[in-house]
Amino acid sequence: MLAASGKVPNVKNFNKDNPMTDWTAGYVSEIGYTYGYYTELNPQRLALPLLAAGIVPPEVETACELGFGQGMSINIHAAASGVAWWGTDFNPSQAGFALELAAASGASAKLFDQAFAEFCARPDLPDFDFIGLHGIWSWISDENRAVIVDFIRSKLKVGGVLYISYNTQPGWATMVPMRELLIAYGEALAAKGQGIVNRIDAALDFADQLFAAQPGFAAANPQVAQRIAKMKEQNRHYLAHEYFNRDWHPMSVAKMAEWLAPAKLGYAASAHYLDHVDAINLSEPQQALLNGIPDIGFRQLVRDFC
Ligand SMILES: C[S@@+](CC[C@H](N)C(=O)[O-])C[C@H]1O[C@@H](n2cnc3c(N)ncnc32)[C@H](O)[C@@H]1O
Image 1 (cartoon, rainbow, N blue to C red):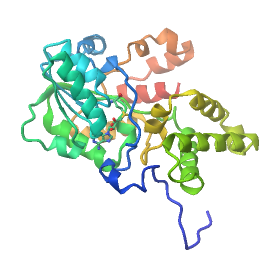
Image 2: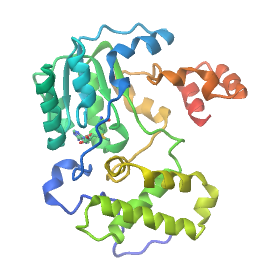
Image 3: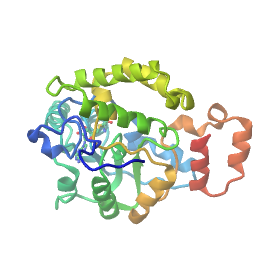
């Protein structure tokens, strides 16, 4: 690498020039997230994968969702069960929508628009049997990840369960430099003030120009061009939250284990039921290789490579 003094380009997020969005910690706030329901956040579904892994599932009476987005999942779970739900999402328009849903259903979910650090320090929180985070971990800073680990350490009951989704390595490895390029394009060339959707479109058009020039990176990583082509068809609200934050840190299951060890947590099982059916996910040689690995964490790491 050649280094020179002067202006150093930095990977930032598309929000950075708006002082009104300082509360975001680099997270996209000018465009709301999608209205998704995520079944893995439902504590009723814990029993099957945990029992299959030889682990006794807890009776869930108290549960917490961190970063509930528009609040579809937490509200459905609160309305359709006797579980006492608590949750937060610092985007006030999303938290407002979630509160409207709660009022309409009559469920007693306790929903807040606090940042993780503020919410996790609340003195009125109960201890939880279940804590869930969907689409959060890979998109926040190390500082916020540490807040969440501390929270789990002090607020998840003994025998409790954490559900956490994240973008894993090596599956996302080749997208890391590509997404840095998209962000850097926004920093260097996209007109400020044209709105995040236009800036995303401009960055994707630039990626097409890059691929048309047949760069060595695309030859070595042919799936990247396919991913960009797929992105062009995807909902811009989703893309903004998925790729255009300051933080995006796909990590391996081994790194996840390091992060979660201080909270005394170990990998139990995949919450995605179809992951448990080897025949549809793995070839026979892959199954044989994995069956020979006794360590559950290392087996999952190798499986992620497969
Ligand atoms: C990709 S969205 C996922 C939302 C929801 N879990 C879902 O899957 O639909 C990430 C959410 O985390 C929220 N968020 C990000 N950083 C946060 C923080 N420091 N404190 C509270 N919420 C945060 C965002 O507002 C956003 O709604």
